[in-house]
Image (cartoon, rainbow over all chains, first blue to last red; front, side, top):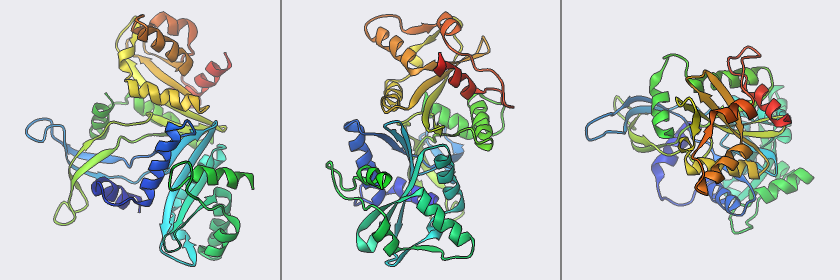
Length: 185
Length: 185
């Protein structure tokens, strides 16, 4: 539910660190250390009313979040385009594919098609584990599901085949270190 | 003035095609033809009030545009990260560098540093001409200006050294064709 999340993000202010905030923190660190330039993509807002005068001058007084037409995070590192979405599940045994909307899958596919590196960062909340799911793995499961196969990726698949993100380089989720490992496998 | 533009974009609806809309049109065409996947980056909105019930349920009732911390457009083509801002000037004889804010220059520099392709698409409104200004050229002028040199890029520099964007592939501004030429020079 990207739009819901955009609202939450925008309202939450300084509540406890959420998954996405850890990624933003990692990106800030990567930027500072010259490792990568990766940004969170803002969710577009459709403005209906905008105050050009009065006490609310310069403020949006009516509007709504539109569906994001691209990935959650995009950037560049060593010439590679990095494009990914961050997903969380409370499910212990699998990652349900309905966490990903069709258009999100299509955007990841498109970035990959143009030789970017597309992936998902998947957090199993109850296991306190985060994995890199490369697009090619996602695509295999996605196509299986489309053919009537299972609609989720089993937890043991991650455990066995995916690289887990660990803390490192002074950030809680050093996901680029994990991505580099995943690309070498 | 990126924030002002975000407001204008969001409000204008179906007025005549603006420069940025031509770029968006080109991107749609590139997407369709499998040439590139390049997106406009939304300007983030800080939500102050959000209606969770009542007739405005699901709507932002108070908020404002924040400064964009990244480029106007980002994407990927043939594995290359493409990052650029679109700028217009009514000036006939030069492109004033104060059209670019410091943080915009820094973001372009950062994408280039990580081996992306950073550039500006510059439209001389009164000449009806659009040019590709590669980051390395921008940087030279930027650094000259910082040393006390001229604060603008002369029009004849564009005329002599930059590739002009022409219509092509069914779009009014086939800027990727121009970029490819510019990269080969």
